Length: 466
Ligand code: GLU
Image (cartoon, rainbow, N blue to C red; front, side):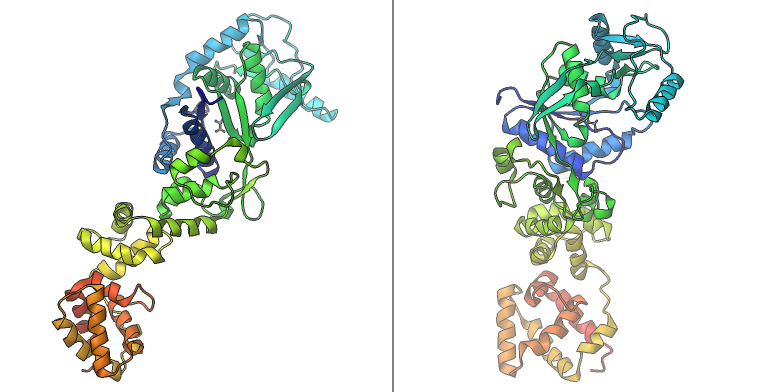
């Protein structure tokens, strides 16, 4: 089975790529990569009313951002109608499909009647054996098996058996000539040589119907793996109530793609207790057997924490590249690279998202830097002010402006004056950052540089009466 694996991700562009879709794409991608096979992207845009180019673009961008690449495609179903027509003709010629003239009104009336009699609504086979010729407005239906069962082995759920009575003579081509979802999916999966169909279990009902098309064409069915859906922490189907659900929303909130990928893969798939995987590790360890039968639970808090871990472990160069759009958004631009790298180093341990990190950069780079006078007043006692004046002298004579140098300088100053660090630390923090919580004082001073540090001390003392 390891030879010649072909998987696909076939989203309908009727909405932004959401977490469930991204996870399905990821599973298909991992499976293909693991088996050195092919992964295909196909945009199922046959529903012209609900599909938009914007959604298709979003799906493509989201996959790219996540690092899920494809070997073929994107194919667009809307450009492949001639292929579907070929399959419909093949089925008609083999006598496994037929024209049906029943009108919508007739079908609706029969549906109502069946419901009133407590029966499952189903096409009553009026045209099945009539061998009707083609006619404008006729639909094409599949001759589904009427008795027996359809059985297949699902790679997640095990053996599944459905009585064929439950299948309908489903429509393959609508009266306007367009192919239906079932026909197009099967035709494409055959055309593209798809060997494994990994998809959400909301498609489980479709599978016996699609198998009927394969059988009518005399072809072997592919392998199926139906993945349980994603639930929110309240065990209800994942929706906006549980937090952001589109992939791009995570990008905008400042998540790193690897954090989201790891969060996603772990919903429904596990490998012992391991929480974090590199891509090569995921490819090596991923297996369909590792997918659980029960729905996976999505927890945004957990992914947020994971993002914090990834930020902490990423190198500054990478973070800088990812951070720039967030900085620009809040008007911080044209900052010299070295300074930014230093700033990132101080903010890494305390930022769970890139957005938070960009916010953290404000204290270093936002200009003009304006003190919060109310806050300052609380810290600038006469004693502190007098110490600050002396400290400012000392700092202006300081040569090596790095953490070690500053630490030594402070130690000398405090020892000589018998001053405790805590007397001065918090006021100085407020002077330099406008905040009561920040990275370490010496780190902050290093990022600000000597001139800016002295300038902030000076302006804080202006108007304080000394
Ligand atoms: N286009 C379908 C969807 O977005 C997927 C079809 C399939 O996986 O077979 O749900």
